[in-house]
Image (cartoon, rainbow, N blue to C red):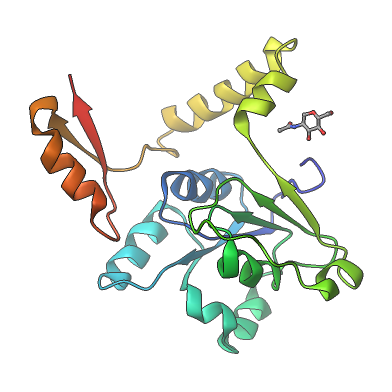
Length: 200
Ligand SMILES: *[C@@H]1O[C@H](CO)[C@@H](O)[C@H](O)[C@H]1NC(C)=O
């Protein structure tokens, strides 16, 4: 994971960019001077979503299908190829991300919403030496259980970004527990941008 760590001026590409993780990645990267290419599924309110993610600090917001289009070459004239791809989806979406990672770069998977395995092109391994890794925060905490400083300093860094107004939680709607049915219905709608929080 350390080898994959992007630094100032590097680029990160991610799918599920409008998810809670995706929104946090956009904001943390922006605070560190890291460019982000944010991939989202096409949807009726795509332009509104672009504006919202850009206001959060996203450098580029593109649709899944744009990953296969020549216009992406244009984008790479102004921004370096990503050193890191963050995958929360799996399946075709992950393979498409992988195609754009720079030589020696990494794809780190933290989720699998599509419930589909990732196909890694042989050329990505032989000619680009792409590293395919996973991340599970529970394991990260176990690894650092003897080292309280690590968790603390990670949380301190995030809290400092929150205090500076650079990191905010994703939008949510608070719903009384008795109206859980309404909350469930809303949560099942496609392309929802707000989390439903049950208030007890
Ligand atoms: C936890 O530690 C193992 C052994 O050092 C390492 O291979 C793994 O990548 C670590 N996992 C995380 C999430 O830090």
